[in-house]
Length: 102
Ligand SMILES: [Zn+2]
Image 1 (cartoon, rainbow, N blue to C red):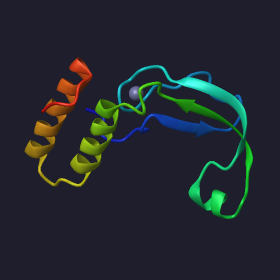
Image 2: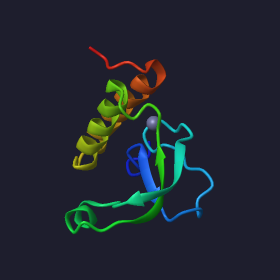
Image 3: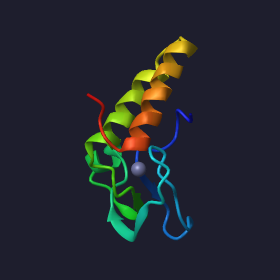
């Protein structure tokens, strides 16, 4: 289980990255090139913008995808490797079924 990695959206400088895979589900992400706008909260606050490419996972908005992001955020803060293993098992199950478990 890779605990870091992107959450299904990555912005890069234009043209430097050919393809990018989703840090949540591993799928190849779709790309929109040469987008003009801010890439971060601070830049948006300062009304700044610049050209960039945006990679997005097509499943980013789904409930199961969002659940995995939430589980990873929980796991990152756990000191216990055993508890992280339990969460990793739950993430594997969600990835297999693409369903949020009851
Ligand atoms: Zn994904």
